[in-house]
Every structure is written in C-alpha cells, then in structure tokens.
Amino acid sequence: MDYLFFRNRPDRMTAEFVRGEYDALIARIDGAESAATPDEWLKLYADWNALKGYISGEWSRTSYAFAKHMNDPELEAADSYIRREVGPVTSDGDFTMTGALLRSRHRGAIGGEHNRHLMRVYENELAPLAPVNRDLRVRVSDLAQRYSKISASAGVTIDGEEMTLQRAGTFLGSDDRAVRMRAFDAVRAWHLEQRGERAAIFGEMVKLRHRMAANVGYDTFTPLGYLSMERMDYGPDDVAGFRESVRRHAVPLQTALYRRQEEQLGVDALRPWDSPYDPALTLPPGIVPVENQLDTAGRIFDALSPVLGGHFTKMREGGWIDLENRKGKRGGAFCTGFADEGHPAILCNSVGDADDVRTLVHEMGHAFQGWESGGIGDVALRMPSADVGEIHSLGMEMLSLRHIDQFFSPENAEKFRRGRWKKSVQAICYISIVDEFQHWVYENPDATFDERDQAWERIWDIYRPGIDYSEIEDFKRTIWYGQAHIFRSPFYYIDYAIAETGAMQLALIDAEDHDRAMEIYMNLCRIGGTMSVLDIFKAAGLRSPFDPDVIRDLMAHAARELASLIPPATP
Image: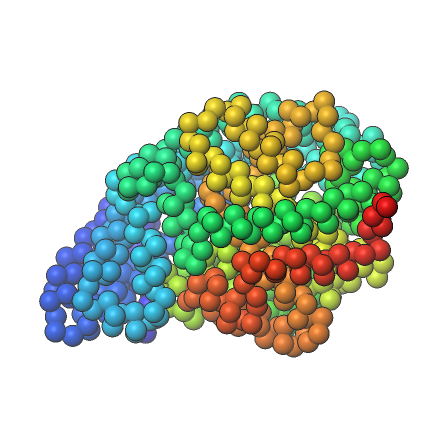
C-alpha cells in the first residue's frame, strides 16, 4: 500500500480543507481504539500519514518557490498563508493524533507494522507541537522570514559595481590583498548597518522561544530545542564533551595552519581579509563557470554510481535544481523534498567559485538520501534527523573527491582535495563556536544585544585564535548575524560536526576500499530516518562522534593529509 497516496487532493490547499480532514481523522480515533484488533488503527494511521505527505509536499512546493524569488509579492503571500493559516491547523491536528497514537493500546502493533523507531520519533514530536505555543510558533516563523528577506535583498558595491553578498564573497579569494580588503570593507559595512534590525529580530525570537519552553514546563528553551531537533541519543552534556575534544585536538591544528598561512602571505598577523585566501590551496575566482557546473557534476555522479547519476539526471530534467545566485533569492543552499511527489529539490547560490562545487555536491548528497529512502512509507521516517542527514551530504563531499579532476586540472584538483581536509578542521572549530553560543543564548534569555555580541566574541576567541581583528572588533562581534541557522533553526549546527566525524571516517574507508565505502554510503541513504543517529553510526560500522578519542584520531589523520602545509613547531 502506498501510504503517501492522498485520494482527496484539492486544487488548492486551504486551512478549511486541512481542518476538515483532521476533524474526520480525529472522529475515527475512539472507534479504532475500541476495536478488538489493530486493523482500524492501522487504516487510520495510513490515512493520517497520507494527509501528512500531501501537506508536507504542498508546504515544500510553496516555500521552495518563494525561496527562489523572495521579492515576489504573490509567492510571499502564498508562503505566509501556509505558515500562518495552514500551519497551526496542521500542528493542532498532528498533536491530537500523535497523543492518541502514543496512548493507544494498539501502539505496539502500529510500531511493529512500521518501525519500532517510529514511536520514539512521535514521542519527541509531542512537546514541540503543543497547541499552547501555536501563535508563538507563527510569530517566530514570521521573524525568520523577515531575517531571510533582509539577506536576500542584500547588495554591496565594490569598485563601482553593485552585487549580492555571495558575489562579493568571491573577491575574498583574490590573490590581490587590496581587492580582498575592499571586498571585506564592503561586506563588513553592510553587516554593521544591518546589525540593529537583525539583533532586534533575534532578541524577539529568544523571548518567544523562552515563553514556548515555559509553556510546556521547561526552565529554558534548550530541552525543547533538542526535542525539536529530534535528539534522542545524547544531550547538552554529551555535546559539551564533544566541544572539549575540539578544543583539545582541532583548535591547535587550526592554529598551526594559520601560522603557515601567515608565513606564506608574508604578514606579521593574519587579518580577516587574509584568512579566506590560502596561497597553497585557494583556487582563483571564476574557476568553475556556473553554466558548466551541472554537466560536470553529472559526470562525477555517473562515475561514482549509475544509480546516483540517474537520480541527478532526473532532477535536472525535472527542473529541481536552482543553481545560480541572483538578487532576491534566499541566501545559502538547501535541499527540500516533496513527499507526495516522491522527489527532492535543491537550491544553491553558485557564483563560479570552487566552493560552488562543494555546495552542489553537498546538497545532492541530501537529495540522494531522499531518492534512496523514497520507499519508506512513513512520512515521519522518510527523512532523518539533521545530525544523520548531514552524513549523506558531507559524506558525498568526501566520496566525490576521487573524481574531482572532472572540474579541475590535476594540480588544482589536489589543492581542492587538501582544502577539503583543511575545511574539516576549520568547520569543526567554527561549528563549536555556534553551538556553544546557542547554548549560552538560551541559558541567558534576558541578555542584552551587546551582551550576546560579547559572548560570541569570547567564545570565538576560544575556538578561532590566530586571526587578528584589532581595531575592527565590531565586526568580529557581529559575524553570527550572518549565520541563518542561529535564527531559523536553534541548535541545528552541531549536527554538521557530528556528521563530519562520520564523513571523515567514510573517507578513510574509501581510501582503503572504494566499493565498501560506496556500499556503506548507499545503505546510509536507504536507512532514512528509521534509526537514531548513534544507532546509524553503529550500523554503518563507524565510531561514535562522542567517543572521547574520535576527534583526536581524525585530527591526527587530517594533520597527515596537510603535513606539507604545517610548519614545524618552534623550539
């Protein structure tokens, strides 16, 4: 049975329609519960699941269309309607159905029919769906869209040319220090100019989230945030231990790499306009023209696996890849899925730089998981939690390195491969800044705007020493305003570091046995969300990210990969 087939699909989804469908489902609960066998509950669950698939798909189509054109008033109105009108009806209906399912005497049969992990997922979802927070969730969503529109409309002028922030960022990779400085000054000025409005948006978000937590019995937002991120295997103490390992083993390696960069640049101190340019690794701006990126990526995926190549071809033919950066487009990159149509879609902001390759491959990793787990009928299990999902994307970044010469010359391909290992080191350090900052923010919900900026600066100096921000500390304190995850998805960031430990382990396996690495990767994709993150690590034969020695060992390998770039320690 196709549990995502929704027989009553209307021409346009309305709040009234969704309310009527949920009312009809809820009216069947008592009869299903009193039945002697679980058959009626299984039918009820199937119909609820189909409705969720349809609503999820329609929501994704609407938000994806708006993300592509955030200055379009009709698309904005459609997005607002589904968030503000349909969303609350859906969350209330799901709260009632979830509670009934968890209390049901037939829950064991339903879990057994589908997946034992299913009930753990629903247990996690209950508090975040609480109707008492219905209006607060809408208000937070409105604020998130305000934040995204600010970034989508951003423009700076460099040497008389107006451009998006993403395009301006390409100049930071120039080998001309004066060009880098001008680009940095333009981007810095924009961020400082927008600081007040974005600080106000975030301050209101924190207040609302704190109220949401109090409404469901928590002292702070942190436990509710963890539930919202589907954390099942670990808590804040485990993550704090992970960050401690990063401080001990990743930060010193990052500092050594910065020392080498200073020496190659011939500067006494590495300034923020210098750090993005690494003479040994940075590839020149415009090295991967946007118009060629999809053709080249297709050859890489074909070489890795005919199955993956086929998925990529379907996405190109379906128009489900929006690649090029433009003004009015939501910043960053993401993958979404249309559960009722059975396919994913991705959005990138390609500008022709080498990092476009990493981003495109990363988002396609998410998409491959979407294709491979498409046979899972339960909407709640088809997509994994973010800490699992990022293994597919970061893992694909690592696995694709063996064929990256499709994009680059042999010399530049080697630079790109080494650069990816350097990025692993730096990313884990930066992710730890974001994560520790988020924990501080929600433990201190009454902090002022300035106190938040000061906390960010203090934490930054712990995990990213070695870059000199003297006389421009104002920018260092406000870097976090550009990190959309902090605004839109609290506690969604350590997921990347957790997954990076899996991706690096996958790279080590790939170096020894490519076929085995690809088999593990494809199985990871097929698992979808049917297991928790630590169970998935175990099933794949990977060491737990919370193993106290795993960061030590992975950083030791990264150091070997980058050995020729690290100067010897001063006696």
